[in-house]
Amino acid sequence: MTVRFLKCAAVIASLAVPPVAYAQNVASAPVTAPADFYKMKLGSFTIVALSDGIISLPADQLLVERTPGEVKAILAAANAPTLEPTSVNAYLIDTGARRILVDSGSGSYFGPTLGRAITALKAAGYKPEDIDEVLITHLHPDHVGGLSVDGARVFPNATIRMAQPEQDFWLDKANLAKVDASVQSSFDAAAASLAPYSAAGRVKPFQPGETIDAGVTAVSLPGHTAGHTGYRVESGGKTLLIWGDVMHVAVVQLKDPAVTIKFDLSQAEASRSRATIMADAAKRHYLVAAAHLQFPGIGTLNKAAQGWQWTPVPTPPASAQ
Image (cartoon, rainbow, N blue to C red):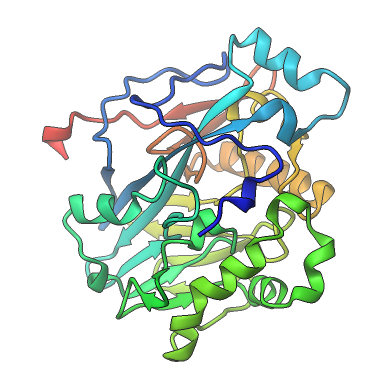
């Protein structure tokens, strides 16, 4: 496998402990969740955050700032490193009747610090064959690399679902020149990850905004990729939005959401999607689950004096999981 997805900038670092919340805009909370998973109730549903591990992103090289020096200034003011420890999170929705995985982790695409999502799933009490459906936020390899191993399905009973525009884009190499060099290998990774499911007739794309399952609705969040999708989960009057890659480096993008990242297909559209969904989450007070915020990546957003504040959910000791 390859680490070319981040070949232009990323450095993979092995960290013994989870990253701390650096920014003034990130409300501190004890990091007491188990290393692999975190469970919570959402109405009658059970939500399980699954840690795929941690990768270090050179924020000063990857982020696209509005004014020269902005990113380094924000990092310095928050006493944050330029090589930012970044979580990769997947999420399981257990409705009681169905077990729906959102993203699969990175598999073996990024080396030893990532690829733990299946281990986390098993630690949480589930087996890969228990999964009925895998919903994909987008087809970058840190989200779909865990779907298959050596050409075989990791989730033998699951149907893979993503927005039709997302599948159309990444399975057509005519689009290669439209993306940054750092994500060009996503075309091969997407094809390889989906291939055994396609061969079994287990890939079923949907149209943006579709209701996917009872209590689960696709939310179009374009910009990061052509069909980047979040999933609104609703049960018992409670709402959680699993928003994929709306945000990569919280310490900077909470301060200035207009800062984008080289991985985005459309910088302008990604910025608009982020601004819109952050404002909606703050206004409507629902929970957000984020692929790249500090594990478990679940919390709420509120407008702060300068920028936004992220408040993580309180995480109980492992014994209480």
